[in-house]
Image (cartoon, rainbow, N blue to C red):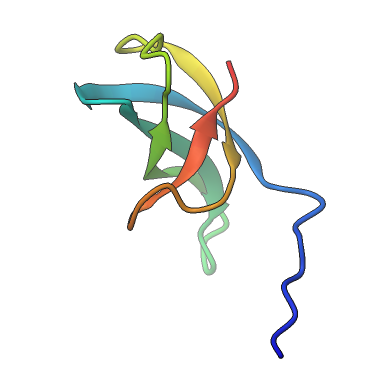
Amino acid sequence: MEKVIAKNNPRILNGVVVSTKMAKTVVVEVPRLVKHPKYGKRFVRSKRYLAHDEAGEAKLGEKVRIQETRPYSRHKNFKILS
């Protein structure tokens, strides 16, 4: 029998909505600062996440918070908080 452990602290990320062309789904780009391993300069890397938007309220260019949840589909593991 396999044990399923619930996540007590799901990840919450801040990002910007870059696409709203899918039904109930938005693409959110989340930037982060990384430090170059040799030279030490900091620069921005970003990653795109698919997030579930049940009400379809998110608009293009809007800043949103997304929370990690159970998988909604193959690539969609986040939902919009605000």
